Length: 233
Image 1: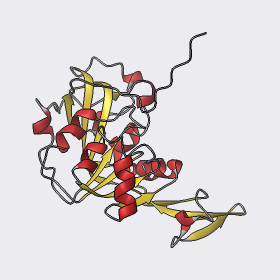
Image 2 (image 1 turned 180 degrees about the vertical axis):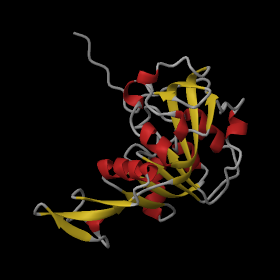
Image 3 (image 1 turned 180 degrees about the horizontal axis):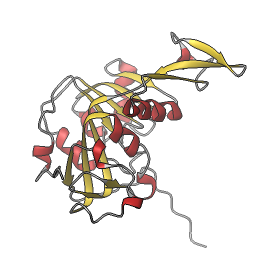
Image 4 (image 1 turned 90 degrees about the vertical axis):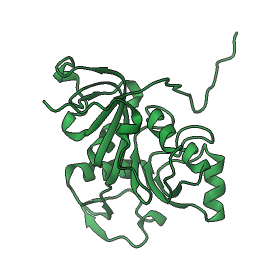
């Protein structure tokens, strides 16, 4: 069996260059590849197109890449928690393609499944549909959406093995499995890395065939995007 384990994050990021398209798993700050993003933010790579459900916050997640102006285009569905993102978008420094969340998920899944495009009713009659082909199915208009793929996909899992099989935990099982499928090279960071054969096949969420590189992550902050505490009685 092929061993896909990389000793450290630097080796796992070999081949990353400017002008590439990256995918990042995660929803808000849940399940984002923290270690990979932090390492990318220290590299001299720029003019990146990034596909992610969100844009992180000012000092964490993709906010780190935005601070250094490494990203020139964001393809996202929700970007409301990042002031620097807002500033760059309104000033014209950052190109933004906002996509309905379900459409974004399906475009990633389609890219990984080898489906080049699909029709969906989501977004019809809005700016999302501008310039796109429209067809009617079952009496309802649908717009054509193209699949998304990336040069690199970065995902984060709870457990993984040396063959690249991944298990996600709780809400971290969001965009991660979909984006793991759609990267030409998928780099997975895991909280716990085990030898091949130790994971129950029935519990694996992403088969190793979709993962080319895997490494043991360190020091996960697991921040909460908006923390609300109940008042004491």
